[in-house]
Structure formats: C-alpha cells, structure tokens
Length: 85
Image 1 (cartoon, helix red, strand yellow):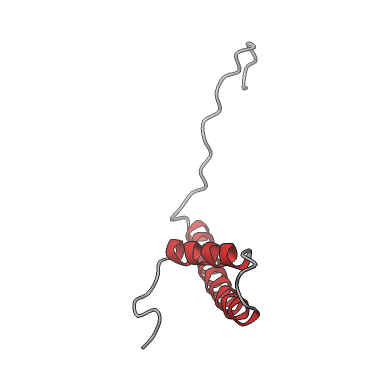
Image 2 (cartoon, helix red, strand yellow):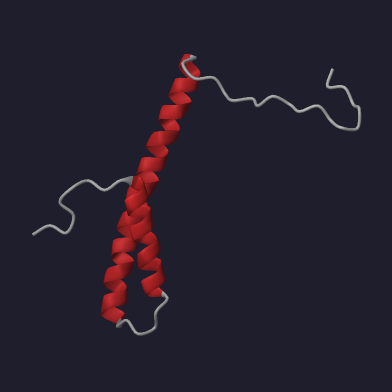
C-alpha cells in the first residue's frame, strides 16, 4: 500500500517536511528511524524545489509574454513635504 495515494499540495509537503525536521531534532529516535526520516525529508525537499522552479518559470514566462506586468505599488507622498517629481 502506498503511503501517499493522492497528490499532496505544496503546502502539505512543506508542513510534512517541517514535521520531519522537528522529529529529527528529537534525540529519542533511533539511528535507523532518523535515517528513514532524513531520506523522506530529502525526497520532499527535492519535490518542493521542483515545484518552486516550475512556478518561477511560469511567472517568468507570463512576464515575458506581457500577460503579466510587474507590480509597482504607488508611492506614498512623504509627510516631510518632499515632492515625488
């Protein structure tokens, strides 16, 4: 039986990785259990990196196509009386 039947969201994977890191800090785990957790953490870290890279490429592509413009928030006028000209 597979441990993860359905596809986990990025956020779920990140929470799982954080939980693994917390468990690895616990000195009561055996070396074998710690190695298994470490292996799971490495796998999750790789999956998360791939998803982040994919998202970055998608954003970059959208920006190059002109479909998405960079956000430039309006500048607030300084209270010291300085003009923004």
